[in-house]
Image (tube, rainbow, N blue to C red; front, side, top):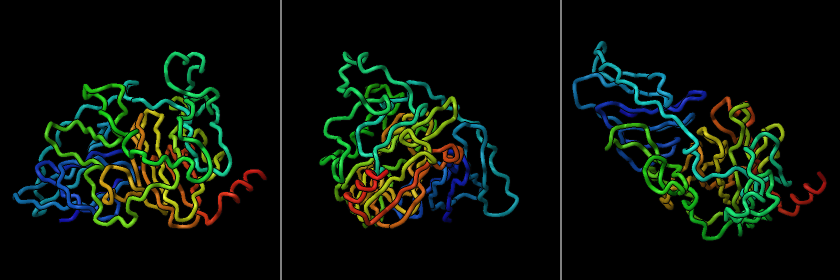
Length: 356
């Protein structure tokens, strides 16, 4: 049987499994992938996966979706005939609790990359956690530049915010800012957190799907270097329940403007302690998971707390497209942008900015 799993919830991430029955993933987000057999899939809001299952025993199997907050299960029963009782529901796994130690090495504030907006952009008050004054950081060896925009870390050398191509970072290692050990592994605590690590609390040896397992059967975009890199910081204030992108809520933000035909690297930087399922309409996102021409094509990317994730986007569809967190309360609160794909030159953009 082929099952199409769709997380249609508003805010809930689900850990999906069929006890006693492996699943072979054959499609991710509507795109065929090389078959990969797994025992569990963590599904962010809006994600879809097609799986093949082949029951070989005369029994009822439970398709279980357990919320990551461990409040309950959703269950569908697969059985060879009606009326067969399923196995009792298993006990819930321990509820995960995030602490400040899970924030990784993602300091708040602009990194110095292009933000993709026609005019320079400043963080709005209250959207970014306060940072120590630069004078207090003089002995910390951070290399941050004084006067950093929005009170965050200064621009990194070689990552200037300029015209097209200025932030392209030749030779950039796609996994350089997303690698490292996941929290709790006992490895270097100063290493960046792995954005593709998945810990469902399953017993050792359980095969849990990672984006690195997904290999596209067809990715016609290839692997050419990006023309530019754009910073997409996921920002907000959890106590006041304010959510934004690059320190600006949707109604106060400029659009992100892409030139038609460009390949753009979006660098998601999650400064918050919540997962964000980032969704881009009209264009495919290609997470840089190390599979070259076989990197998958996805419409939604989960960005875990305190991590940095690189995805490439080829601007091959003109027009205006919604770009938002698919946690609907976050989107409603302001974590959304408009992406405009235009046939327009950089000079015309500069002139529009100077005229306000």
